[in-house]
Length: 250
Image (cartoon, rainbow, N blue to C red; front, side, top):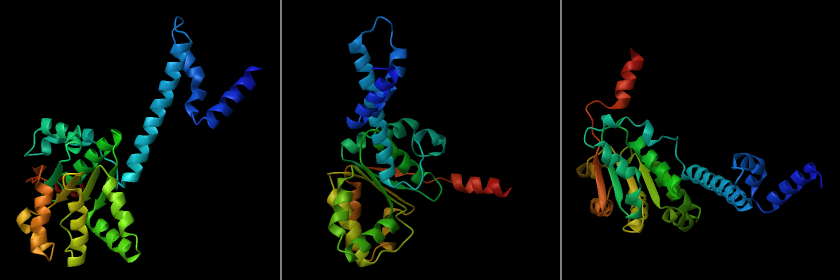
């Protein structure tokens, strides 16, 4: 069998076996020490295939999470967090709070990094193989209403329930009617002590009654979110976006 035919046969088998990185066998051979044998070659080749699959899984999970854009912990200016130290932020980035089924509620004025931190934690979770779903509160509410109108509500709720981490961003810019409130409450309540939620808002808990008609439900919602949770004070006298906008205008 000629070298060309051998290469074509390897390519064919790799497709049939769904091991595309086996086509990189020449690169693996070049990296082996002359004293290493067939078993070492096989281990190295299988490791390349495994690494490729894991990277593909991470990319797929990040894409399916629905992030509006990608932000990382490394891109955060941690010195701007006036009420959190660096070690605490890095502890959150370990995603242990997800394995412990804990929630995070971020409260702070606009432009202080709530969305950035939420996305960064979500990406960290994806990199660890977890399933994440990101929604703005308005988008989630609209999708729930639309799903109910189209008789797909149970399916959507199941999809959300499967996420190891649910991120609800911008819970402050809209007023929800009673029906919207009930759907949002059910999504959060169903996750209580089972799966983790990150919620970001500009409003203190005492101001949440301005968003929902049913004040009793507001109390229950806050109880669900704050039980076994980290409540982060992300208020700042010098929010990044305001400072950035000032620099641009100058």
